[in-house]
Image 1 (cartoon, one colour):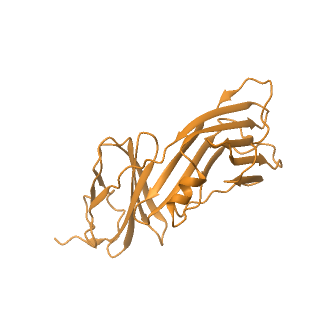
Image 2 (cartoon, one colour):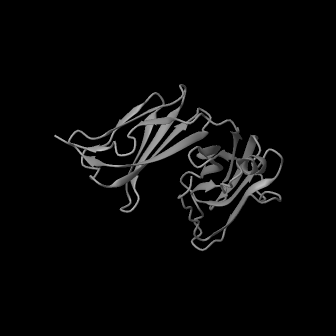
Image 3 (cartoon, one colour):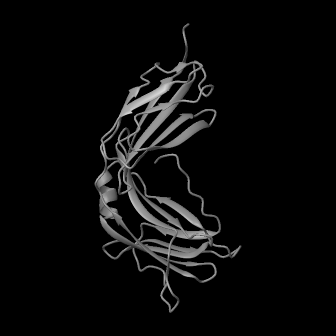
Length: 233
């Protein structure tokens, strides 16, 4: 969601534009991408939605990548600018997050997206992924609330509720000024996380992000802040 940055050195990229995909036809045998996925992420706290594409070419860098939407539009059309001749191995591309989430759903319709690529050595890759607009319900953070975070030898416990049947959960704990952070990917049934002892500092503000990931990959996040306080013995 907000705050992530994608850097594509030595490459040209068009995201969300119309037009035909890059020419990737040929007689070479097509191999699957290591990763070719698309999903939606919702920030329930901010009220925004984005579409995320993730692509991995495996051991080789990609010289070409195209992704075609279910309605035939090319939503990604990438060609390496050359330079090193190595291409780009891995992508995480995020759409804008307009105040009206329906604009994102219209720009990226539900259905099957077709991925096509060529590595820097000329090997051709292909893949398909299905995007749905169905998002999981938002989890509810129970603790900490306000200044409920306690710095102690045993570590603070974060607890929450969430719908059953989630494939995974993602928890982040960040002190924005220092850049200190923890990110944990947790099993779907998890409802508690103990912060490692020594991470929190009394009188310091922290931000929690908690996301639930549905089996199809779509995710819903909530955010909260709290100020850690010293334990009273």
